[in-house]
Length: 250
Image 1 (cartoon, rainbow, N blue to C red):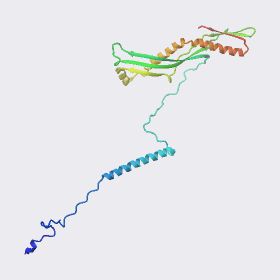
Image 2 (cartoon, one colour; image 1 turned 90 degrees about the vertical axis):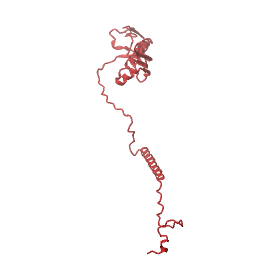
Image 3 (tube, rainbow, N blue to C red; image 1 turned 120 degrees about the vertical axis):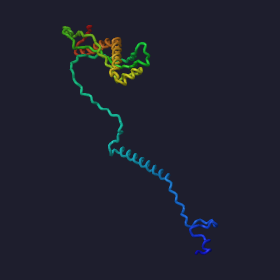
Image 4 (cartoon, rainbow, N blue to C red; image 1 turned 180 degrees about the horizontal axis):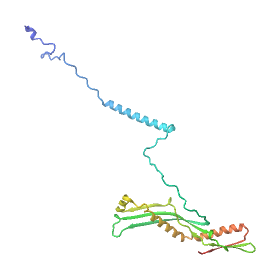
């Protein structure tokens, strides 16, 4: 049987409710988990530093030329699958090119439909064409009797065909489309399947304009004068005192 004094004594496991003392056997406060924010920032800085160092090393290696040049994997590449040129014919030329004219023309070509608004169906092209035209004398057409020499060998007369104009040579490197307007249906047609020869019409018009300008430019007269001077200088160097050059109209 327990003693009365033992009943009123506090146990060692519980604090006396009268004294306010802390429990002697209570567990300690658990330690707080370390904050992860600082570690993530340090890891990110390490990654960025390593990437910057790798870029510097690669640039240095490329500069020294130790490794092959690094190329952009998405750079534009061009492949030429054209077939070799086929020689169709050859011909001997006996033309003396005596003059050449260089011309430039602006072609303003518009194709539309009556009673249809331009925003719906319209095609207008401003094309700046640059080309040249040669004026030549064809010595291959000379016949017997075209060259007449005097009895004393001091004069000579030459009858030549009149100068002709060669075909217009359109210089595509100097020619360009200045502006172009296209209707909605024209643009849709280009997306479905455009006409690859659409610009051939403006090329042809530019060549026609340049050819007409060459006819009115006095290029033939310039070719006649230059050919006459060339033959006079050549024949006088051969001992002829008088040289007469005449042109026969075709």
